[in-house]
Length: 588
Image (tube, rainbow, N blue to C red; front, side, top):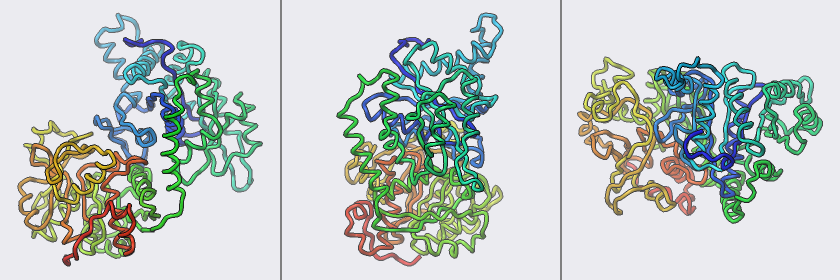
């Protein structure tokens, strides 16, 4: 028990997966947690991963989707992004754990003699460490309910100790302390034409064998769960039919919270946990009204339509850019725009083919990434956007590609490149600099997490962040025509070499966002006389986009693209608010 822990003060919702991984445990858990938060309760989610990595930083996007970076710099699973977006709260390293981190903590204690000579075992030491961590999260966040998502599938070797720890935690906390949720998969073979539940039954049996009796079962399937399938799952899991929830494929995950509410699962959980006395009806009504307005816009007819090109080397896997995809979805709802995203793999075409591939695009995003593959084609995409006037947003590597493209084709440095991508290039306009290593303490590691960005006045970046300020966005300091700071999340190693900044600026590139103290460039843009919308950030703006508070750089991109494609859009209040009228563009 951590210091200050009061048994009975905190409750736990535990979410397990059966049949296979990737079913959407995080989506279900975050949707249910949102409903409880909307009622005025304090919630704290945590994802428990079974792999031995200390964090997600070294995992390939093809294995686990995007790496989601928290404000405190921890590299985590993409499910943490789902929690942040649905709960609209920033999480910390307390909200994520791997088996590697748990084992490291136990072994460090063993080396320090904390176990007083005992032989260190999975039970009680490893399971005890898990329980202590969960109770510490409850104490330090003041959570009414801790939502615990166990990664992987019941029956896996690597998460068995988590399941046992949660079984013990529920037992120790006593009746009404925990609600167990099982996600399972219902198969519908095309040749049979009906839903088959046998795999789901066997998966649920594994959970029962581990000593966990679920109170709720959520089923994943392409189509809504049929009544016969629901009754079979209820029978073989011991869960009431009313508590078997169909989490079938939907147009958007943001419709799930209301679906859960309509069948009363939020009330069911609160009743089981004896928390109905902590509910605020006024807060719930206000929160639901705000969310329903958003979902209404999400599902409603759109006034505008656009085609957006997303050019990355992981384009074959949308989960690699999950937060970018969601940021686009947030903007589409806010600006009533149907955004058709064309996922373009830059490893499949040459740089001189970029113009042809992007000819039909109304806007282009070059997202982050690592390594040399596909980068020359990304530079070709940047060049096309600059020369054609296509609205452009560069993210992290997309920022660096814009710097290199401008250096080569505008600033007269044809040999410009990055020391990461082409160590032998003539002009390393993007590099790791010794003085920057000393400044940031980077060494061989990346610059990670939330950092301050000093935004220069009277720039496109300043315009967009000032608009968000009107909605309560985090702008600090500065009058209307003075610099101000914003906080964004970074994940990179390389910077623009300060030795080239003056030459790049003389060639028309504007560095509108900088490190508050050091000569580190963090936002670039082209002036409105040269381009309707050309903006890039060394950070990852998609990580801070929320359904009810879309990220301003994405808002600006889509608003500019709408205004360029639809001449009558200037009269639309939303588009007009987020797009800056620009004079006639000077040909590139």
